[in-house]
Length: 237
Image (cartoon, rainbow, N blue to C red):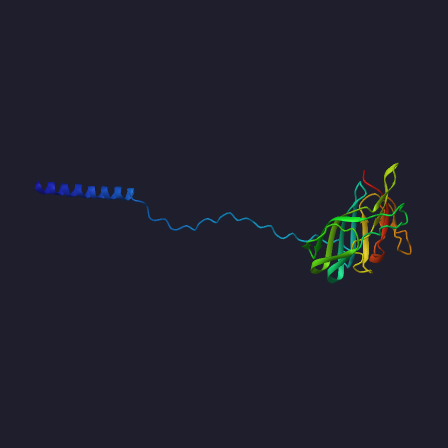
């Protein structure tokens, strides 16, 4: 009997140990978590460099020359983009305004052209311009020696209105600012709207309009030294 009692005590003690161990395991923290690499922070994508615009085939785009795009404004001024491709790199450009102070064929009086808001890219690099207003001939220094130059600007003072009764009819003198860079550079001039006629007073054949309105264009490949054009046009209303 005494032996049975001792056996019972041993069984109860064993049960108590098992229960105590289970409780300890349940209450104790689990195994230490393995270190986790910190999540990466937010990544800000930097803007990629803007690729240069695709060049328009022809002079000033894919071959040496000048490409002049002229957008008439209702007040007689023009927004102008001038793309130049030179046969050799240069770090200075000679600028020349349309002829000023003399009567031109088709113009009733002399003009006083002026360029404002001049912006310049040389080989797709921005060139700081000390004076963005050009009122006469002069040299434009570039920050790099470049073969490709783009100028954008507003040309004013080169337009004469035909008469008060036909307020949108006008005559204007147009010439690339960079026409003095190389006298032989072929030059293409595009007027985006309203062109009625074009005369090139420095050419042997002065009428340089091609086609008929509203699809009239200007003769392509004019030598830069002779690329002075007198436009007859209807200004935007």
